[in-house]
Figure 1 (tube, rainbow, N blue to C red):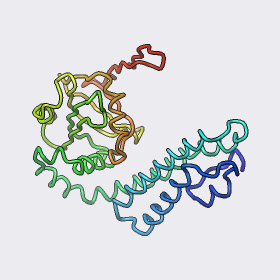
Figure 2 (figure 1 turned 90 degrees about the horizontal axis):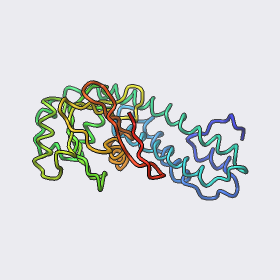
Figure 3 (figure 1 turned 120 degrees about the horizontal axis):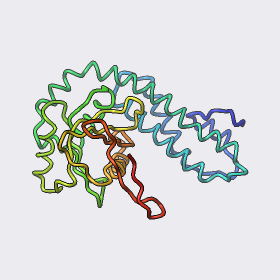
Figure 4 (figure 1 turned 180 degrees about the horizontal axis):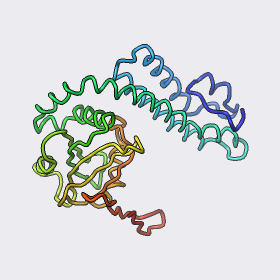
Length: 260
């Protein structure tokens, strides 16, 4: 193996290049699943659910590669580490191909989805399956949806994100407030869209007068990362005027860091 080599989405490649002292690694589980998902996708290139499975499997490979690097010896496995770190580019390239294909498929069903969305009542807005569907549409369409976000600071994974394409974002704020789960300080609303420069980032543009929950970006990221079906891994929050929302958080030394 040379440092200039690129890793492959193949268990056979990994078996041929793994060091003898790395008998078991996270890649041993992630690569076969990705291979199987991609093989299925090539046979069913018009199935959006299959594409979703591939994208999830690719994310798992990236996570597994990072964990495998941590098992490596920095000196003895220097070349291997350099090659494994290139999985990010490999996964990004394959994910871009799949997302472009998914975008075409979604465009063909866009009108049907919009009709269904018009009929969404408050109960449906809280349904996980409906949220997954809306996040998928949000990521593939490049359009801006209305959102309401209730932040649980003690358990970010249980925060609530509501999405709709029509209506006013204030209605989603009121819907969340009626649950009694969040106080006004932990609620916000506005417009959501995928970052055109980073497919993993969800951008929340706040409506005029919307609140700015504390540590919203940091805790919002934890919410997104808690469930791969939410499609995004990072969150960026901006004001109605496009200015980044300050997200104060303690760093590893206990000091306060402010992103502006």
